Image (cartoon, rainbow, N blue to C red):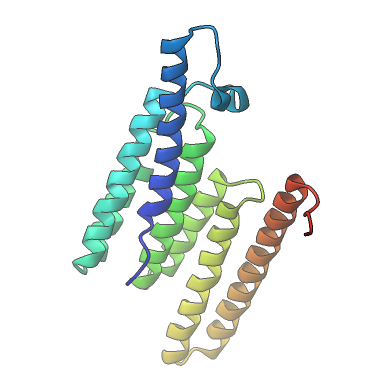
Length: 199
């Protein structure tokens, strides 16, 4: 069974709700005291962001249902509603990550329909929401590599060797860039965590 993309949306929503709940609880108990999560985040949760994340999760869930019923067209239309809608001001990092992830999913769906040029445009749109080296940028480039690999297979079946080689080169370049970015993310996270302790 395929993994549910809405799981990452759920995780972001859950984190935002936890932060919001903590902020409300601390204000109710002692208005001038910050709870631990506010001390680290130092940013109140925006109700607009919470509502938008809930909407995003719901639309991804509806896209899952459409995919399960074999309707890629309906799944694409549902996700287009999200990327074509209004974003919270900024947008905040949580919304930018969801947008990047949604564009990656759109690109995957379009590639399954053989719409490679449009799929690559979705990747490009997603990259605008993930300009820094993050998992989301790396994932978008991973998707780009996969869609060009799929296109090269279709071109091979159509007997277009020159186009096959071009698509394979693009697939390889995007995949290698995805690996480079994810390596950078891993190294950065390990450096932030400090030296590992040994028993």
